[in-house]
Structures are given as structure tokens and as C-alpha cells.
Amino acid sequence: MNKNSEKFTLAGGAGQMEGLIDLPAGEPRGVALVAHPHPLYGGTMDNKVAVTLMRTFVGLGYVVARINFRGVGASEGVHDRGHGETDDMGLLYQHMTGKYPGLPVVLSGFSFGTYVQSQLGKRLAEAGTPAERLVLVGTAAKKWELAEVPADTILIHGENDDTIPLQDVFDWARPQDIPVLVIPGADHFFHRKLGHIKTWVTALWKSGQKDASEAA
Image (cartoon, rainbow, N blue to C red):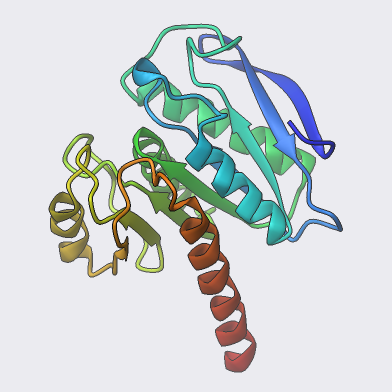
């Protein structure tokens, strides 16, 4: 935890959830919610990929919120196969949009967290309050029934991922016509390749801002 981090607790569907909010240097331009990998395999909000996503979005000017899923750390409850975890992430969304009304919200996740964020993204879109964008790393294609995601979703995957094979991600993304950014030599946890996540998300974000200003 750094000096710009704030611990918090939030009532979830199975009891209290613990979380962290990380603040950017200046006024926030948005809110980013980061979801961690599978809780039954050691996933926590302090997972190195989740932390990399947090630092990336803080650097882009976002307030970033993370929670430990049910049964992880001080969060109460037991693993609910993604259903309860999606509900809890929805409660985090409500909490953060209440604290920062009017700001756009980004949904980002790693591995199991990509399932949670795809499902929450679908719920928000159906409610008429779509996320600004989804950023999914190590997308859990075929392992979990991910919802369809918007065309501008950023998908980042490791070339040598043996937990979620790259071909599975291509097969899932192809019908949606969504590009997949492949990091050469990266495994599932992006060992020695974490910097590429920050580099590419930052570059794509700034490119998107430039395109939007040119269109205006």
C-alpha cells in the first residue's frame, strides 16, 4: 500500500468486504475498478497483475478501487463461482459512483476477474449506464462463460499462457471482431513482462483521447 492508498470496508452480499482505493496525483478524470484472479488459486487484490493495472490507471488520472473477493483476506463469505463476486463488484460500482458522481467508470480485470468484469459490463450496459471501457488481461476465455464485450475492449494476453491458451482467446474474440494484443514470450502471470501491460494500456488510452479530440 502506498501513501495515496485508503483502506475501506463495504457491505457485500455475503458480509463485509475489504478493499483499497488508490488516488491519482491531481483531480481524477474517472474511476477504475480492478478485479483480481481466481480466489481458490491464491488470487487477491494484491496480485501483481492487478496491482500493475491499478498503477496504470492511477497514472492515467483515475481513482482505482479494488476489493478482495469472498473468502479472501478479511472479506467474508465463500467463493460463489463468479455470481456473487459479480454482485459484489456491482456494489463496489455503486459505492464508487456515489463517492465520485458523474465520472466515467472503467472495468478492468485479470484472469477470473475478466469474467466478473465482462458480466458487470453487460449489466451496466443493459441498465443504460455502460462502462467507459473494459480492459481485460489474461482473458478467461472458455474457462468461464464471459459475456460479450464492447468492440473497443482492450484485450491483452501472453503468447505463452499455458493457463488460458492464446488460441482460446482468439476463438472467443473472433466472433466479436475484437483485436487481441499479444505480448511475446509472456506467460499467464506476465513474469518479467508486467511493464508491457502498463505501456500498452497507456498508449492505447492516449491514442483514444487523441482520436476523440480530433473527431470533436
